[in-house]
Each structure stands twice: as structure tokens, then as C-alpha cells.
Image (cartoon, rainbow, N blue to C red; front, side, top):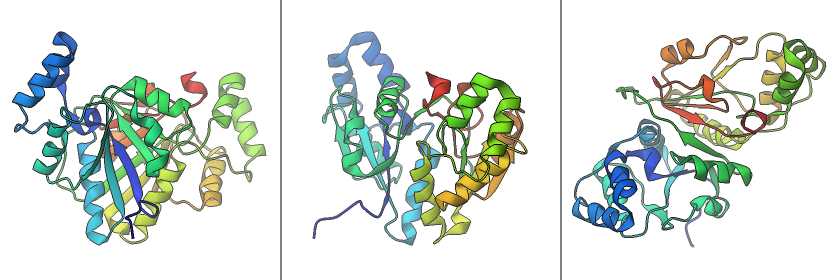
Length: 290
């Protein structure tokens, strides 16, 4: 029987998110594709240093010690020959990544449904926006000064509206202001919001948590406050999903909370909430990104 990805949490990762490509990207932009090919060939035996999403991916793959739970697949604009260094680097860092798609300049997001992916991470904003516009769950990894720690547990943090939920409530806020938003959410408190782009990714994380609750901690960090917090909680319950922590900040800055939580990855649909001190991912979804 052929192997299947059907029951796994599948994450697509671009080399730009997984590794630090500063030097090789500089060669490409300064000297063009042929020089880039020659550079990668000459440095084939030199592994890339870890990038922003490396701490997240490393811990995600370690969950496979409990059984086949996670599959990470490289989705790269590299050609097959320039992509050799990517998989060699993964092996050097003991990342169990064996599957890859190299598309030589072509945006790779269209292969996500065929691979059952619930998340695609890249530092290429254009690729991420194309994926999101196609209704696919993708995020742009931003530059970070985060220093990885020795805690083996995976810490994930999500914004709520525009990330786990759709942007319907955010549209009310942007058109009517805070008071209208609070009234709208109180009126619709028992009506769950429609799922957003990362709802299925959280569902996959929850499946793994049932086997290894102590290996993953999930937090929601949102600008919502009472009484609008109830609809967020009711939506999660209606979707059959759970989180360990919820921070309803009522518009306060998220950075101080994130600096304490120190998530290995944080997803938000608004760039103004993203910081350099933790690995952050911009989800360019909904009204906030139109």
C-alpha cells in the first residue's frame, strides 16, 4: 500500500523560513541566477544556519517520537540542483525532512491541497499572499532576534480574529468602532464565527495534544476583551478545539505578553502586533490586509 498523508499534520516550509539564506540571497539579487547556481554548488557541503521557523519545525518533528504524527515538506522556488543544499542542511541539523518540491521560480502554493497541507510558511511575501488569495493557509515568517531555548516542549500562540476565526467581527470593528463591535459580539455570543485560515492547523495540533499534552502548549493572544471574549471561547468550543491559555487584552500591546510566553511561533493577521523578540508569522488574510 502506498504511503498516505491523510491522517498526518502536514506543514509546508520554504527554505527562506527554515534557514538563514542571507548570503545566498545576496548573491542571487546582486549577480543573478547563474551566479547563484554556482555559489550553491560551491557551498553544497556547508549547511545553512537555522532560520526563524527552525525552533518551531524542530519541535514539531520531534513529536514523531510518539508515532507518525507530523510531516514537514519543503516547498521551494529553487531548482532541483540548487535545492540540494536545503535537504543536506536539514539532515545536518537532524531534521527528519525527506520530501521536497522544487519548482525553479514558480510559486509552489498550488501543490498544497495535493499534499493535505494545513500550513505553509515562507519569508517570501508574494508567495504567501498568492496562497492566501487562493484560500490556502499560509503565513510570512518575519525577521526575529529570538534565541532558541532548551525546553523540548513546543509553544504556539495565535491571534484570534483573522487567524483562527474569519474576519467578520473585525469588519464590524473597522466600520463601526469599538462600541458597535462589542454590541455585535454580545448579540451574537452563541453564534460561532466561521473558521479562519489556521483553524485546521489548530485542529491538527489538538489531535497531537491528546497523545502528548505536556509536549505542546497553545495560547490565544487577542485584542478582544469582555464581553466579546465569550464569542471567541464559544467559537472554539463549537469547532471542537481547545487552547491552554487565553489572553484577552482589550487593545493593550501584545509584546509584553509575548516576551513572557516566548512562543516558538506566533501568528497574527496585523503586522503592528508582530515583534522581533519572538518568531512571528504574518497571516495576510481578511479586511486588515485589503
